[in-house]
Length: 140
Image (cartoon, rainbow, N blue to C red; front, side, top):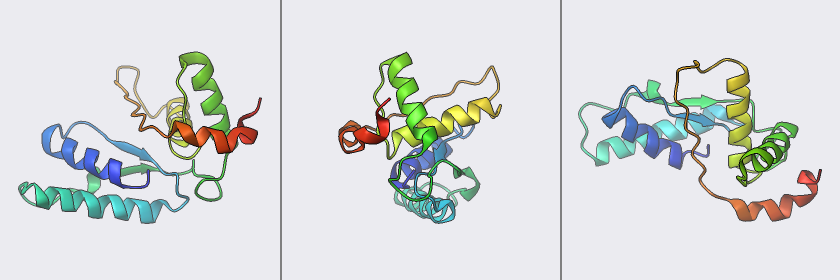
């Protein structure tokens, strides 16, 4: 998450479906800064929509550990997630955002972070053209 999409989704679900968890995967290698930005932006959305009270900051959930050394640098987990998702689902993920997000989702599933009866939705936000500059990192 770089903040904007997660902020909008988090504010919307907090207002309309508060039981839904929106979990962002940090792709920036600075989860504290990203979390603060999501809280700030979600608060702006909340205020702009004149929702009651203030945005509940505890709704911001950001999973660290999948960004790698820095923004945009490939990781082995990302590479494995991109290849696995392409092979099993025919879904192309980009190496910067959705590939690292899928690596995070796979890691969270493997860690048992979701119950067997929970519905999990992965939001693919695009970015497929970013595959081309990263082709060397993705060669099998």
